Image (cartoon, rainbow over all chains, first blue to last red; front, side, top):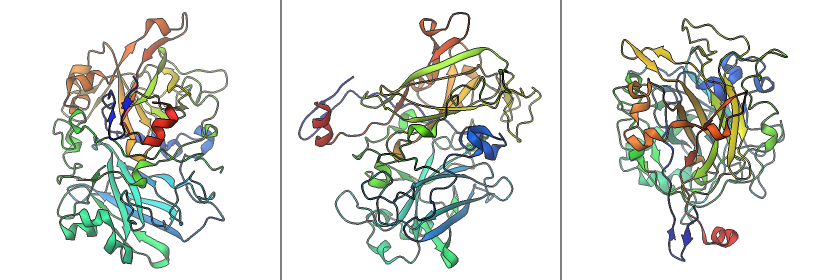
Length: 208
Length: 249
């Protein structure tokens, strides 16, 4: 089915998107099989287990935290994916991007503690569609049993002066909710980002 | 490890997602969703490059045989137990364009309905020759296929007597992070389909029907494996004038 285009608009014959379904309790088998206990599958190394290599550009950081349900209990069966620009604000594959940084990683929450942990780099700034610059941020996608459509949020860095002029943060109508998008700490380059699925501290999620 | 991302994801804003065909976050028939569903409205915005690009994997990410669940966990010369099937279909985006060289990952229970996972304690035994995961890349025309056993149905703790129809979990990467999708594929004719609380979190009957793979006699391999056809559609992107010229539209 091919569409027709026009200088101002597209006229395309749209197909409906395939409906999302929960990743379920065993999402690890398909996405992080070594973590699930499938010894040796795919060479014994889970895809996206790390996203930076020796010689990468920029500041190495750790982003870690937990995902809490409506009772405040941590999810011990969730899976998170990260996608972000490199230290210079370029995405993997773009001209001039850091060849030692993939920009994408995938991590399960720990089966006991519920902690997830990404070893990444502090991202550079990326343009907003109207040309303004966004504050440094990381895209985060969360799936788990009980989550019917993967949830999308962003990690910003508390205290970064660029947050004040970030076009998306400015769109969060209830200012106090911006705090749910801020990773905290930063001592020894470890940033804490907890996600609350419900409750007074419910994280801001985005429909993009 | 080699750089896995070979080219940038496509730029260009995404078409607004039609949430009416997706399950709501809060779907009480599926009890686990009650405490895991955000209650506040998500904030909408037009994708920035963080959402309009995404990881694009090189072909070296997928190894030979990764797409064959019959043998990718089996001892040499052995094969998983159960009905041998092929699942094939096309990956398209909302405008009907094939999505080439996209990574598809699958996972499933074995033929008895048991997952190889430490949290699955179902009575049915593990199959020593079945791991339950596989992956492949779509070809230049968006086609994908993998070979496996038909999974079994199994009971699960929701209401006192709920059963999952036979299904295969499918994870798909498009060209944009905002196209990321996980879904489940069911099998035409399965009597458990009308009773599944998870499938019926999807509110739209046509969208439910599109999650049911069709038996494809024409693609079935004689004396070997039955073939099931399952096409997958990712959200569409608005084309940029540059892309239009490139494609000669």
